[in-house]
Image (cartoon, rainbow over all chains, first blue to last red; front, side, top):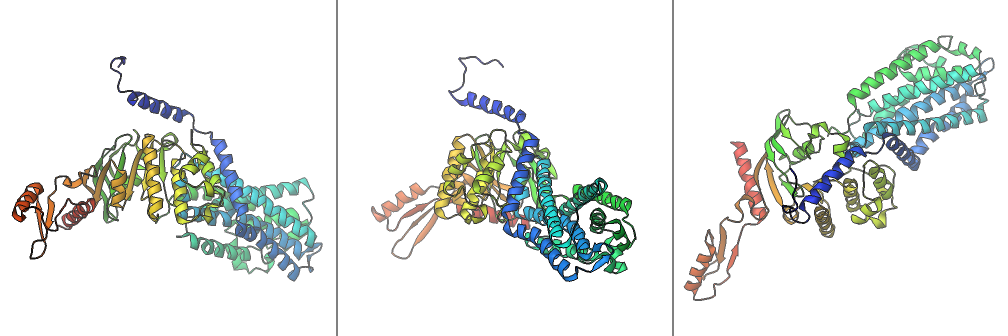
Length: 293
Length: 280
């Protein structure tokens, strides 16, 4: 309806309403770009992680200290011709480190954020969910790369670990790293729904992870693990990640130390791919922004 | 805005046919005892929960299908159960401001909620009251047209509550529509243009604070002290009674008081009536 100047309503009533509508429609078109929010979330996640001294000490300190302890206690003896036990431990511990920065940290971190109400609060803002997950991916990648570099440095310093010597071995390292990180991250996000409170998140997540590291040949050389434990471990990603890392760092004759007497690259890729697919489905079905309480 | 809203959980009907119409720029308070359905109702409006029946339109949209554009127009003040990420107050407010198309400047919001002195402090180092102010800052940083406040001043000391009330008055002057739930009747009376009382999942009364539940026309209590103890009479015509008493005593009436029911009296009466109705 055309508005005549005579019938204009009291000085401010309509202009204010009109302005509000105009601003509202401007809001609809000018939402911040998703990629910028993803970068912002990533920055916050990384900053927040490195300020959490306890988490940093735990996530980076524990695998390094365990590596030095285990390598020094059991090291020195040649496990096979040209292979030291220290090298075996380093490769396994890199796999354990990847699972700790991806699976363990994400599962505890997301559970805590859910129980504290942070996730609910974020879901009440115009933040796209993808930005949150992008932020987590950035944080996990930064931490996992740092952890891996740290453990490689410890291994080279103390246990004659050699960096992969050929392009083929670097390629093995790369795909085991990427598939392993992805599988463990998805599993971590899925498991974050299990603890019923922020306080119970750490034990609920850490205990099974600890057991998994023992039976998957991270804390104990794989051929010392009883067969039935190895069979259980072979259903989970960690055993395959550790085996894959050994294949990237150790000389070929070390394959003889594997229970299967070979590196089983095809099977490793298959198991990790299945975990990624299953983890995606599980996350999509179980992820909640709110606590159940 | 809301009609015939319903929500049931296994064995419990939390919200049983609620109708609400909240106008632009209004401060609307939902009062009710714990478990009355306040929070469920508000969470449906906020898009956090899905209703079983009824229709809801918040700023013209169904909150069950919340879009980013719609979320950008509402603000929600939530309490964090424990400390959030390892960020400072300023970093946290900036982080949230980035989600919105035209946020308030973060430092301005921090000033508005009175946290300027703590802007560089870690969130985990804030006191309870300061943490609640941060909650409010995060709710308003996006310049919302509609703001939800769920029991915003629980745990505030009296001074902090006054300051918070002033903040709400400022937001209201800016034309922000505010929906708040509260346990505190004085808070509802001080802030709200209109109040609805929820009990057992239903609205049992709705109106302005001064006239809620027939408060303006409710019987007044006239009380005085003759020789033999105090006497109290409830009457619809207190002026007439006082005039009669005045004649009787020949001027001054000893110990005279005339009171209307307080909002609290009305509220408690409404709640107990609803409780009885639910039992039968």
